[in-house]
Image 1: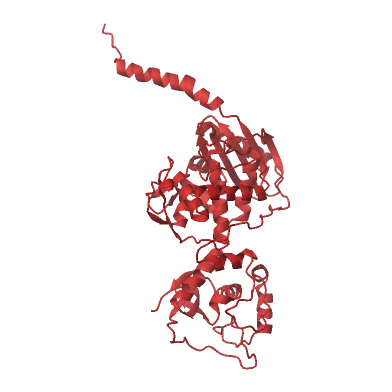
Image 2 (image 1 turned 180 degrees about the vertical axis):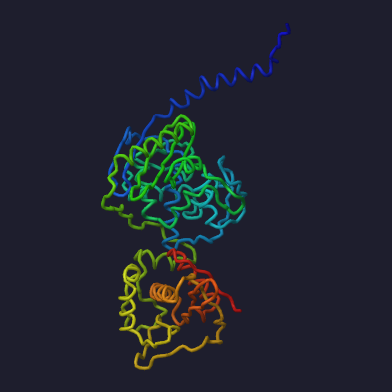
Length: 454
């Protein structure tokens, strides 16, 4: 009978693996205390909690705040999704998980957002912080100001990515609160967290939360996190019918056990949440961004005065009496009232292509725009979407015109029908004005693309 001997090298590997499984893994898990919370996302009511106010390492849950601040900056015109961000040596040197950004490389802000939200890339998170505040330290200070404004009373951030650092701590309650604010304050970006994969500019990346997204019915976010000090963390949200719950776990022993615990907590939340409850959205904090020192100061200052676009006097405009218009929220709630108000303050012709945004100095002599001007290089335009009906396109044109009067003043509103629908266009702009108008509209989350001379 032959006896098979295990080679010494292979035996050594077996021993090391056994030590890792029996000693190292349990010790690292034990070093990460467990905490959990479940809330009804609609009302904010706590449905379950355990150690919810214990300050622990959040790991990459930190990137939820990084992204929240970036969304705030985009909304308020500090930066646009298409801004090309130059990658610093500091950002490129961050340890994995990372996109693989190179020092000196330029990449659009939107791709850094995707990399941080989906892949949880540390280099992308640092680059985002530096793009908004100039340095990671300054960005961390802004993160802390924002956390305080959100009521995250037990959270202190030291960096934009969440790698372990002394004093960089949060709680299950605070992270649950942040997840709820992400959902309701920036719903236009929330779909990022449910993408199984996405194009991050330099490569396609997979979602670190894709297993829970695939396995749990209704799951659509939000963010995973892991370091040895933190354990396996997750803030997850799921929606079923009219019900939505958010569950947070700190200190999971593995990604699989963490996901199983989160699924258990989500189930508990759905069992305890009422079928119908009044929606009580959290109150978004007051904008507290730092004014930019770049050429976009005029945009930041203008929007800093009001989160909703309103007519404001400008030194470059004629000093006639400003025309009263509805605010953007009023227009969105009732476009017909805005139309009545606009007609009461401006000369209007029956032709739908007439400019409704120009405040005439002599209202008794209205101007009818019949063709594009060929002077001054005004051969450019912008497109604000394609719609199923002419009425819908005209409604959006009116809303956009009233919301962005300064750059669209004097342009021609035109609805163009084609085989795919009705295009809503502003025409008769210079190239610079068209580009500026698009940047300002995109900062308000209004879709816009420039149209060059045909």
